[in-house]
Length: 278
Image (tube, rainbow, N blue to C red; front, side, top):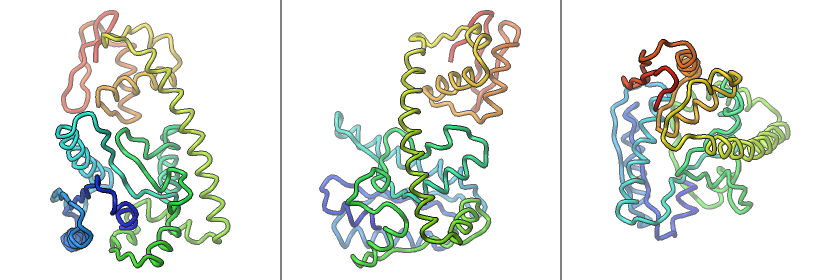
């Protein structure tokens, strides 16, 4: 709601709200957002799902972003050539929590650069000194500007790792909390630059015809080969977990000619004698 308050006078905004259908109060949240948009004269579009109370955070996130990108795509079709971005209200505390979650899951260096999705923009993480940055900044803005909002009751549930990490951070003295956030921000920004450089190098190595030689993956170090493979797959909107990537790399290196490897959604890749094609 603070994000909306800041950009409410921009004539080009559209509010996109997704009702996950995970709790009874979700309908009240939807109605609240509709009322607020009507009050300030901003258009709104709403998506619905019935994910249920036991849905994982990852499944809910995937459904939410599928909706947001479908809205973005529909706008791009209506106004081709215009830049259309999805603005989200992720802030510095969200960033700190997400990095701790990712590192605990062994995501490696990529885990230090969450919220790095093409087509999206995080104003509170942009470095703009005129905008709130942390959760405390956002709450202060809301109080000063009389911005009303609703709190998701699942934010207090210890069912989710994010909430458990948040509770630990809350026990820190305010000055230590601030220092931690600033260190995370510095690490995040430097890692973004490194990630950009890595992806530019990987992009330059991608074959134009989509044909990959098996010998490349036999000669490369495991870490480099996995990174190369991940990048190639994600360019084709195929996302694999770490173990799935390792299995695919092993298949590339060891499968007999013409044997097939099954990717998610039953997509088959034929491993030929000297090459394969994504």
